[in-house]
Length: 192
Image (cartoon, rainbow, N blue to C red; front, side, top):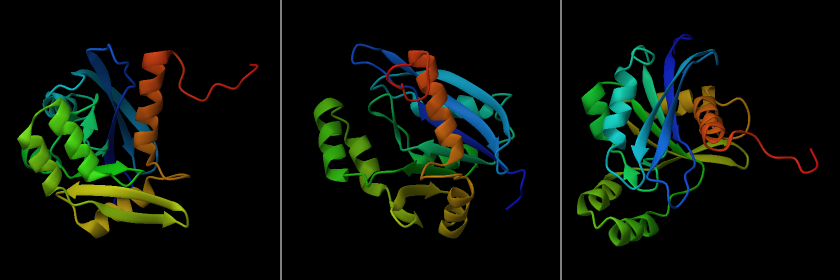
């Protein structure tokens, strides 16, 4: 893999129950951890616009040069769901979704059925192929991929982790999302 390969890492900002929208935060990072830029857009909580918004993000001036799209799961702003395969087919860029917990597909489908009444979203969940990646003893992540081989996707995920089990582009997007929503990004230390 080329050292200057560019990854667009995308995560959503936190949101509260009454919020109508939340932010999608994108971090454009090279494989050597050099950050080249940021892109941010709003999506509707429990809406159906996340996929189109990600396309807008990728096609923006900041992110046009990205080679791979990496997302924190397939749901944003609650149940605003993306289809990694359809995203790959539309953008012709590999898509890797990462979660650090094994997804309970039956629980997800039940929640979609209850809240969204969307058979197409349930069908999408049924089509997903979740792969486990052992990073080190005690550190697992779960991946779905489109447009990239399992070997290359696993290698890319491992190369983007500095410590722990979160790829750096996603970790940065997560921190920026918290900063935008709450005004701080890290842990609050009592007494400071």
